[in-house]
Length: 280
Image (cartoon, rainbow, N blue to C red):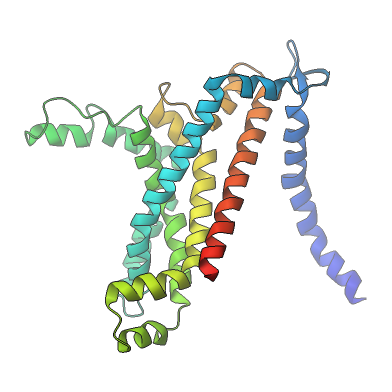
């Protein structure tokens, strides 16, 4: 009776996962091996030609590498900004804690399209940043902050910063305050306590935040499309272009599957390396 009840309780979740997760993944995988059609999404039969087209042209390989680089740099910059913020938010006697939480969570209250358009206003040649620097006499010509990799990284860092702060903050809050206090009582300096005690104990949150931000950066479409324009194209932007603009569904699915495999492999390697370092 208990087993039947457990199955009935799990059934709705299993149906949702199957319909909205498993079926789309299977569809993408099978679509990647279909032949392109003329006037239709797919032709007859299956082929490896879609992957051959990707790996035989340096344009798509370089684009994938650039996408990985953008994801890695965004993750690193986000981590460097999130660490001190998360440690401060985790303090038990933080002044105006509610206001600090609200500031961290505020980007999530605005749609990603609006946030990306907001960065176009800030980073454009006649945007707020360049106009302010010109008014102050610091520059004569506008800085190239838009339609390049730098602008994409800046915008992605702002968009995904909460996803790095919250896991780290949660891990730091779980640290027993007596542990760093014991390290300080034994003569360890503040930087040593952070490096040898707090960071290793916060590693689960750091690992989770890095994986979240990296995966979200790889698959981001709106921000790279608006900030990068037609000059910087990531693999996610090319996937959408292939499927919607040129109606090449098999090739777009192959690009998406390639990005998923490469990104998933990178995440597994990172998780393995950080787990080994964490244990040591």
